[in-house]
Length: 543
Image 1 (cartoon, rainbow, N blue to C red):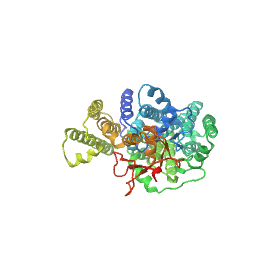
Image 2 (image 1 turned 120 degrees about the vertical axis):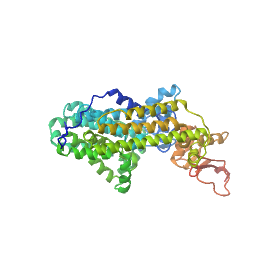
Image 3 (image 1 turned 60 degrees about the vertical axis):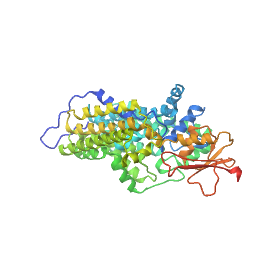
Image 4 (image 1 turned 90 degrees about the vertical axis):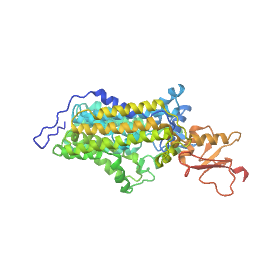
């Protein structure tokens, strides 16, 4: 058990009794906004929505796909969970994408629960909540924690992975079962590279004394016995259904950011990682650095070894990966949030005050700007700022979402009351930061959701093409347009679209400006990006 002893004679501030239900309320207020009430948004949600729709409406669940395209960038666990939730709720009238997005809320709730248990196992009572506050305050998690996308599985899996490793010293068999489920989540929901990263972070602990015991071997063997046979069932099922799809997944997708067995991609430019992690993992990154430094005398304790070794391996893993996008950093938030815990209560007064002031000013001013801009647009005031913001509302409507307005008001008042509460300065800064991130997200969704939906949805352009195709038979060749348009047509319409076997299609969809002299059957633009997302339809039978 890690117990940090300050170097100075001044005792650490006493941690007051805190009400757990307040943390639960904060987590719910952070989780729920944005899960329902809008179309699938670009860039991450469209593919997932189309795959889930196929699962809900068809009999087989082994191969994720949209249109005539198999989609195996991620293994199918998230799609299965989303379809299980979406099937009964869609029968009750909830759109499939809204019902499926609730799966993200479930997985994120599991992630916060697992991280809280890991923090408690490593640092003691009333410490797990600090890790949860740090995690929900991370800037990069705000969007991905509310997206209809499988990437959220990595946060949940690595949170429970960390808890199982911390708990293995107490109940090795139970920890092994939990660890096996976490690894199964990675194998069935993401890719082999994530699983190998988790396995490496578990094996490296054998070097350290707290895990150098026979009981830890029981934990590892139990996890492997549980995870590997179950994932083999899906691989055999996919092989029976489509050997070509399994082969393509193994060759190009199985290793995630490293590619596949036939085409390894290694060592991307580090500039992207270094420039992204600074804001994506804020404030967990600086707090973790301080937590590690302040606990340097306890470096042999599990509370330092476990998160520090996980973070170090993840950094090496990210440095070696060939295809790194921002969501690949999501697993790194787990060990950083845990490593931040021992340093929060001994955060130096100046640093704590600076973080607290910076968080309150940044989030408070951002929320105020969202309120002012929304009010100006509703009142029809004209200025340079409002004219630029009007692009989010191309139809010029001033309809007020009253439920969202009431929610934004409630969360704004609650935030003001929270920042006025007294608590030890380190926890005050972390709590206020998490509440500030929740405030901005809640106000953004409460006030701006209808306009964001207009700018990020493909429903309008898809419906326009459906109208143009009335009375016209035959399939549409969509091989010349971006994937987002393909999946939007597959999700929002029943038009027969083909990307792989499209030679016999009479109609062909193109993206870009219409060439001079070309006669089109239909042309339109997506409201959110008229400059880049222009589409037109050609009749190849007239050539």
